[in-house]
Length: 297
Picture 1 (cartoon, helix red, strand yellow):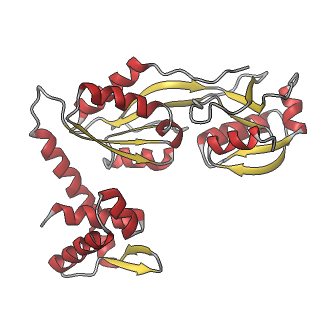
Picture 2 (tube, one colour):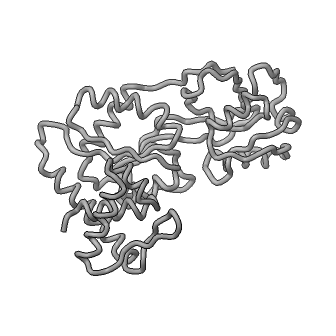
Picture 3 (spheres, one colour):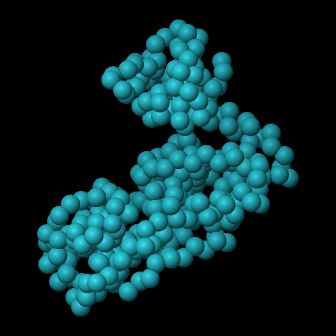
């Protein structure tokens, strides 16, 4: 069985689209569809079903999905075992949150690949919850994400890069004497309560009895920054690395009371066959020691 057929099947199911899988694999949609068809013929069962523009698994496809992922994981491990130990090479499967993808990760990879050009990087963006699950399951070797608000499993290791306190985010023109009064008075752009940073912000508001006038709730810090810059409200967010929109006219104000911080770092599986690549990435990130580029108040 050709492992490329399995990889195409897994991507089609995970991405829910033959076109998206084709973009990920740098193939044409017709080539991906043909690979899936060949796999179905070899196994003698229909594996995927179409519903409009989306693609899902049949009952047979669902039964083999986890086995297919495990086989692909074992193949990557076999390839890593054959690499020359004196040369850093092979594929590093790395995940990152949107803020990490636009801030720390590109700079780290630029330095890492300059020193070790034979490393092949697979990058997967996602939210911290999904990336955490993929590292734990072995689908990713490591991910830069927000540390969950629960104990990490013993099968994983963690390195903290940043501890981000909550700050009041306002337009630069706004003068703030009392952050709590501003949060109570101004229209509020809420950080999504389904993510760690949003949960921390919501906890702070509840602890201090602040009931803001919510205008909207967004799951992206970059989007929140643009909304605040346009004068559509203020927000309570972690003090993140905001490099992509460094031209925005914003101000960050410290809060009067201490509260748990959002912790950002690297999570990786201890049993990964690509541990040397993970450690090389970690070392490059530590050396870079990235710092916020925007002015703070």
